[in-house]
Image 1: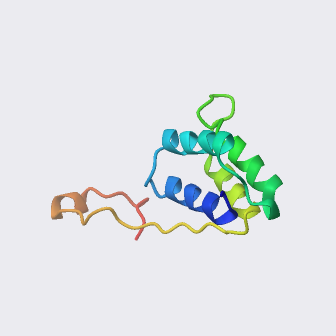
Image 2: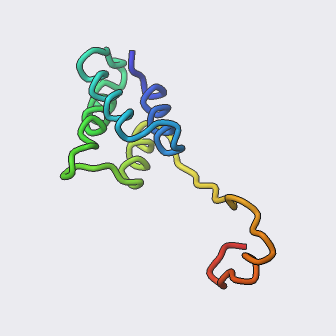
Image 3: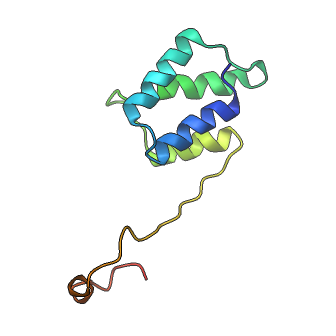
Amino acid sequence: MITRNTLASQLRDYLQHRITRAALVDWAEHAMMEEEFDERDLDTIRDITSRLGLADVREFGLTWEDCEGYLSRLGYRTKVDVVQASQPTPGERSSEGSGNLP
């Protein structure tokens, strides 16, 4: 059964690059055809899942704002944490511009 939490987990995994957009779309398409939705949140879950199933179509797509809105409708909020990917070498430090995060 697809619940708010199930759907939020799929969106979280997509935003954290644990699954691809194609995998999210496949999951949503399968859910629409084969799974039952929690009756308590049927309209919201069905609407969001159906939109995710179309995320691979150019006219629909899937933006960060879409995901943020879907998560909000499911009772979640998003938070971004920016971390440095790796420590720069001494040579790279001297070429850094002033636009870099501290």
